[in-house]
Length: 216
Image 1 (cartoon, helix red, strand yellow):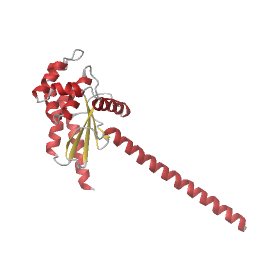
Image 2 (cartoon, helix red, strand yellow; image 1 turned 90 degrees about the vertical axis):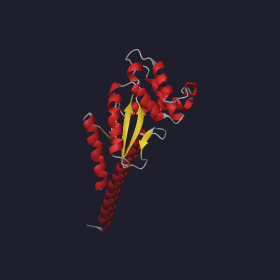
Image 3 (tube, one colour; image 1 turned 30 degrees about the horizontal axis):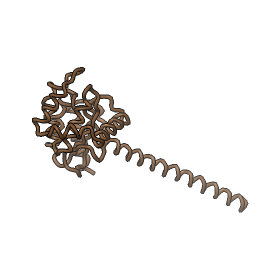
Image 4 (tube, one colour; image 1 turned 45 degrees about the vertical axis):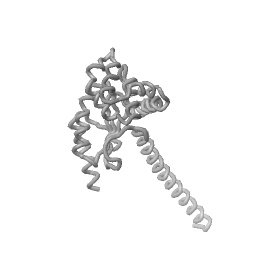
């Protein structure tokens, strides 16, 4: 082989190696970018959350305050927070799929501005049978429930129409579509969807992720 051919061969090998490395870097960057985008879509800075901020396991729930199944899962979510105290953080996201749910979400967001998110959420779930009749919701009953939990109704009715609350509803709706959420509740545990729907399945998936977090 002539010196010229050797040089050409080495150049070709170098180009091939460079191309392979470039592809691998591109794939890695794409994967990292996709993961970052998914995290941002699952959780926004404003999203209400319960539990330790630095918990190794994050449970994201897309819920509708008018959803009966969400109401039935709520005690399980609280049990998870209690059983895995310090190890699990729950992030609440809105999927207002029922008639009247938009206003119920606005009540919750107005409560959050008053530092009353959790008690008003509990009150809306407790009174859900009164106000969330499918097809004909009675939102005044929802307001009464919020007021009984300490909500300043007059202030909340003003805040609920403000740009801050409206922005939350709009962004959560976009994220619901981006994540393909079709029903409530929909859960993600450390970014992974709950593949087999059920209360015990949710508890077991969280427990599995907690155990994995401490086995690394």
